[in-house]
Length: 232
Ligand code: OAD
Image: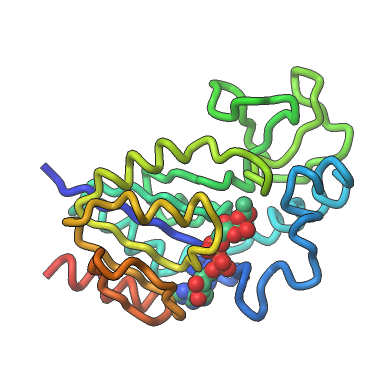
């Protein structure tokens, strides 16, 4: 049976595709107040501003291509059973060919009714590749909103992600500052005996007893190194 390889990715894996990260110097939040555009309070206060922000991000994301780091993860499916848990709302893992991607923080190219309380229910999500406008209504009469897990909202896929991480034989953390909880807490569910790697230009601290192989560098070069170590 194939070993289970679990990847936890963040904005840093998409940086070389031209998607800005959140907390680096040229981070996306420059000029934007996180609370205004990425929180449930912000949505209630000014939905037009929030829709404009995600419409812009959707447009940008539709123009970018996966990079070698995304591709390597997809290619590792030939050798391992791979589950990607990503905090990213772009679809670059899927575009690279990964077949099992858990989007913890939602997806830019999906939307749902603001009245929806369970985004995992069948039919709750609709695909969207253009703009969402104020006044665009779902079948239940609710305003359509981006499928983004905002600050102040539950992370519906968290229990599933915990379960996935806890069954990892191999665990790769790539391009995340591990600053945002509960996603950052997932690293504590990796089995002690799993083989672990962390790839980041500025690797965040991870528990010493977990024996991570720390690879400091860009995601593409770092993932080449991980693949070399895993396949040889
Ligand atoms: P951050 O912007 O917090 O962290 C990006 C990480 O990527 C940092 O550790 C950087 O050092 C690293 N990095 C930058 N460029 C890199 C490169 N070329 N190669 C490798 N690593 C690189 O992004 P996240 O950790 O993903 O949530 O942020 C987590 C969440 O915070 C996001 O999902 C988002 C945000 O608020 C929501 O939108 C709900």
